[in-house]
Length: 171
Image 1 (cartoon, rainbow, N blue to C red):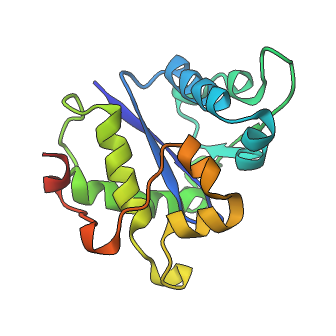
Image 2 (cartoon, rainbow, N blue to C red):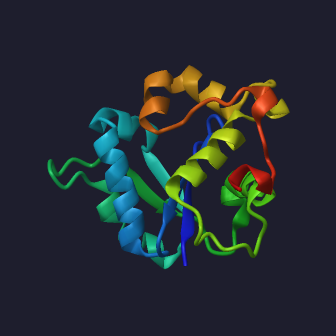
């Protein structure tokens, strides 16, 4: 069934989510290729100088993610976590707990569309965090990279009083 690819930015806690029909290498490649069409090469390289991932088969074609096949330019570098070393992506995994508040474990994603995932991630990324000085990941990302890139990524700030981190968000 459908799966979500999440991309976590360590410097600000922002996490993007992309709904895929299957958990395949081609679907991961397709996601990053779509990002490279929305962003300039410079923006892509700035946002994704390094991609740290697990050793799942969906990441078995790193060159398809690293290289701009039109220009041959190296845009990014894929690295893999050490086996059985979950602390290398612990902040990303902790952020997944927000997703589970909205989509409880065991619930299928088959009824969801990308717009649902974008809405969910906008609510999660707008939620202010104590460890970010009571700013949201959205606000911190905007400080580093500007609002234009957030717009290109489809991210929108949700006002604090409108944030919903419950299953009712996607009903």
